[in-house]
Image (cartoon, rainbow, N blue to C red; front, side, top):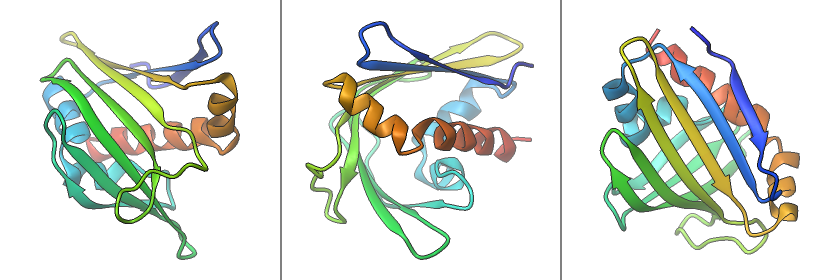
Length: 161
């Protein structure tokens, strides 16, 4: 099994492509990305944790959650689901917000396109995150996104080990 993560910056400078292979069946990975109780178990990089306030997983629905740090830090995020194709893909807008879900103007919004590709031996997840500008992409990367997301995907692997 390849469990390493591949980060690629698109030549436009405005898109980050993340690829990861899992030895986890597609139906279980789909549940882990679409069920708030499972998301709360893996989404945040340790020692942080995720706590869902509300989640309505349908096109036009939202996921409002906080990431809680080991020293009491709390960062709110909101995901707006645009399209959902069961077991195949999800598109969404993601961004930092306040506890009521109002997006912050201090951080860029991210346009996510998540693709699930499965064969009998493994499931590949490809996440494409598009930003308005290359500066927006660099701001999120500089905040530790690559390291944090890689750790979260390791957590995902662990919950099904």
